[in-house]
Image (cartoon, rainbow, N blue to C red; front, side, top):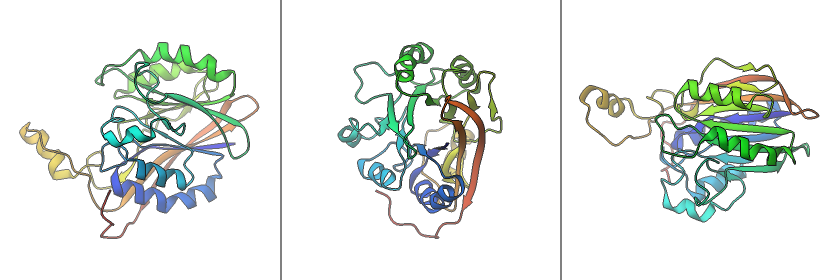
Length: 268
């Protein structure tokens, strides 16, 4: 079975690019299950219920979030939806859930968990200890388990992946918006990619307009970031899984440029 994991969706450009190329990705890879990180899908920061519903309607099974989960207050109305996951290592009192088990198109149960790093990130509970607590629960109902590692630094993602080796099918990083070229199978059968990349504007600085982002480095002054316009780059990966064991057979990166109209509909 194949699982398609899509990197952070950034604003209107990211959404339109993804939705334009998604039918081709489905035809090529025939995914049994689709996961996408959507914490930047609304104007490049947060997620709205309307956008979540539109992404689910296109066949994305689970949307993962991250440190921008609660940047939009309207998300409160969908936090109870099982198809939306925030970091599992948020304190227990935080709304929503950090893991879930779902039925894939082939009928095989697929579990998804999101873990957020703590280096240069908002304070959360320990992701390593959270994984140790949550994984036995997921393993009771699913052999196929995918972990979204939402973290800033590569070392922390790698450490989490090695900690999870043999206990999850795949450990795929999100958050940095830059796809890495280090895909591999760890010794006990877990597929690992430090970062899946992003679905967002090609000509940008991690999805944002170049002049605004560049000025921060040139002046040291804070300016509100704005999602860039133009064509899209859709990044992610496809994980080939042995459903009988839950082990990954391979992980293949996805990286597709998508031409978009010069003018897109107004974002909401």
